[in-house]
Length: 434
Image 1 (cartoon, rainbow, N blue to C red):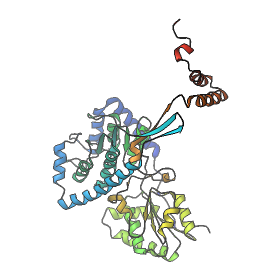
Image 2 (cartoon, helix red, strand yellow):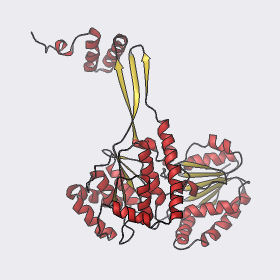
Image 3 (spheres, one colour):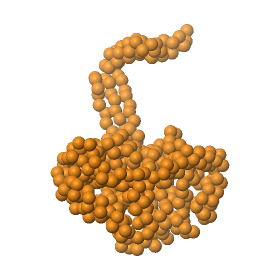
Image 4 (cartoon, rainbow, N blue to C red):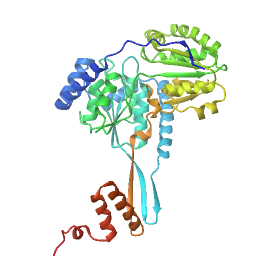
């Protein structure tokens, strides 16, 4: 059966990604050439920020004092879950050594990067959870220095809640910079910070493009686009719960797709009726953003059975995939392409967004086909080593020489031959005395 689209997404007007790329390229080139002066000028012109770029410890302590005790407790709960999950991930990344053959030893080491740059977005919301997810995960990986940056919210600088979360998660340096200038400052090592080995964290299209252009000498977690979410639901699902879960994720912004895949026509029709009503209950500007996302990018797909539903989910490879259907173990074993999986009606994507523990920095735009989200592993280098003694040398050298000559690489073959003959390198090359 062909999937029936009960709601088709008309899509948004095409954006000018070429203009974004050119703007970012020019900004990075200028900041690379002029350093801190250019970054400060962009901060002033684009964000209206004229204060100190480096956030002092006193300012961070003052921000912490502005957070009500009950909210500090809830943020602490989220931080503890995120940290503990990341520490368990770190424990799963092991170094090892084995003897492949007598005398041939090989192994791997897990080495944390030295410096990580964590971008925490600003804009409409105070992204407390993003600060926790990026900084705490880097620290759990063993990163020695974590630099965090976020745009100013107003004349006071970074939102106090975000500053508190940065401090709690263990940021070593904090910069009040947003956008391209913030990413560049961390990558180039400005304002007294060492250059970042890796840049992580979500951001707008300019932040994503800056990370993409800097990738190579600097690592990145991923090039992320707008957040997206899919719900897979059968006849056991509650339509109002499904509708609110779709509306809640559409709240991210007008460019955030939300999708429902189901094999139950009654459920689909009821959700289509309820989603606009749920959105209407949101405050502004949230309601307007969610309505725009639902109208332009929301989809409802009707499938024949659960296998076809799973195929539809794998084909879309959503960032967030929420299963509200019977037999959750079947779904957990069957689904293959998602950033993070949310199993059962008792959970919600918002739990993962804010406090459950697994990271919420996830692949978007179908990238879940080939990668997972931010984790401790992104901050670790898996490097290998090898050592050979006389027991393994003859067979290894003969195989290497034979393969090298078959490939036409005589120099490689000679380096194997010389060890097989047991001659010191200088004498064999004619460079010895006498």
